[in-house]
Length: 176
Image 1 (cartoon, rainbow, N blue to C red):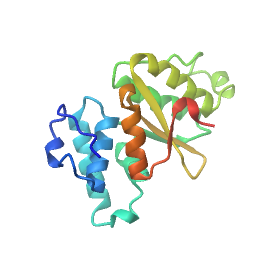
Image 2 (tube, one colour):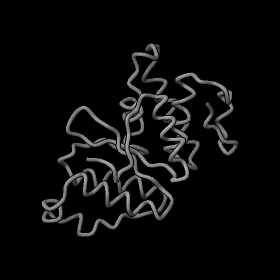
Image 3 (cartoon, one colour):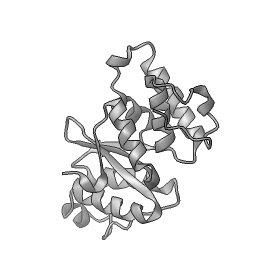
Image 4 (spheres, rainbow, N blue to C red):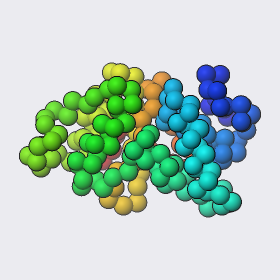
């Protein structure tokens, strides 16, 4: 299975038929950093440093990717901290000069009193979709929200890749 595209300058590191964990993780970084091969390469290098000599079966790919890409191409916040969730998603959307219309003043305490993480994720998903981006949310084992964004054209490759990596994810409008 290959997720490669000739558009990525650092892809030569893996053969198109390479089904190693590193090759899949590299493809994940390319998907969550669309058009930014340098960021993908830096995050991949940080991932490889973080996992070191750990056996593939012992690596929590979603957690490690989230740690090395946090607030650059991924987010992981407490689900109750709606302010942090808004900030994280705004930060990621700003990479593509996009802004989210939160349907209210996201700086206002009353706004946060009336919304939860699911409301915000759906709003962000709905705002990003017309611009060709998909917000993804990962299943977490605690009261947190984690995810990333990809180009909408990469929905199927993202689903396939997540399956290969054992990452359980949903589009932002499917959480709950």
